[in-house]
Length: 153
Ligand SMILES: [Zn+2]
Image 1: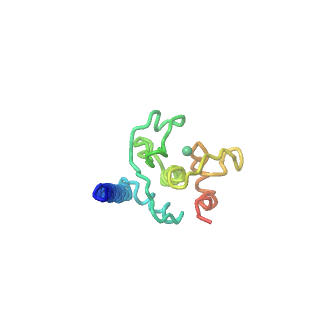
Image 2: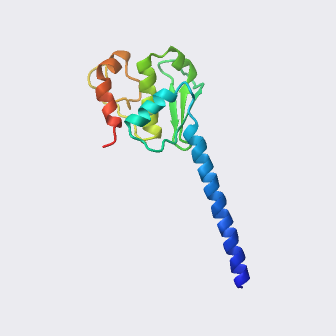
Image 3: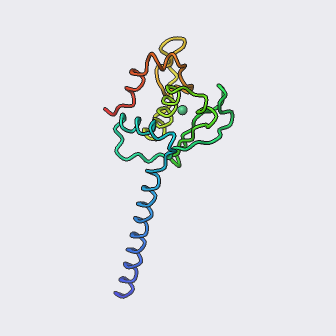
C-alpha cells in the first residue's frame, strides 16, 4: 500500500514538474513574440500602461476587408491573447494611426477593455476604444487626452 502511494506521489510530482516546465516555456515564447515592425509601438504602450508581464502576441495578418474603412484593421483574440494587425492598412497608415490602432488592440488584449462609442463632438470619439479608429485630426488634437485612460491608477 505504501509502495503504491509512493508510486502515485512520484507520478504526481512528475506531472507537476512537466506542467510547470510547459507553462514557463509558453510564457517565454509568448513574451517575445511581437513582430519587429510593431515592437516599438507595443513597448511604448506597455511602458505607459505599466504592464509588468505583457503576454500578448502581436502579428501581421490579412484581415477580411482590411484597408477599407468598413473592414477590420486590427483584431484582438482574447482566447489566444493575440493581436492581428492588417498588413495592407499598416502600409498606408500614418504614424498616429498606427499608434492608435496598436493601443486600441492592446487595450482589448492586455487590459481587457471594451468598446466606448461616445463622442466628443461630431468628428472625434471620446476614446481610442471607439469601435472605429479616430480620424487623423482627432488623434493629433486629443492624443494626450486619449492616452490617459490606459494609465494604471
Ligand atoms: Zn476594438
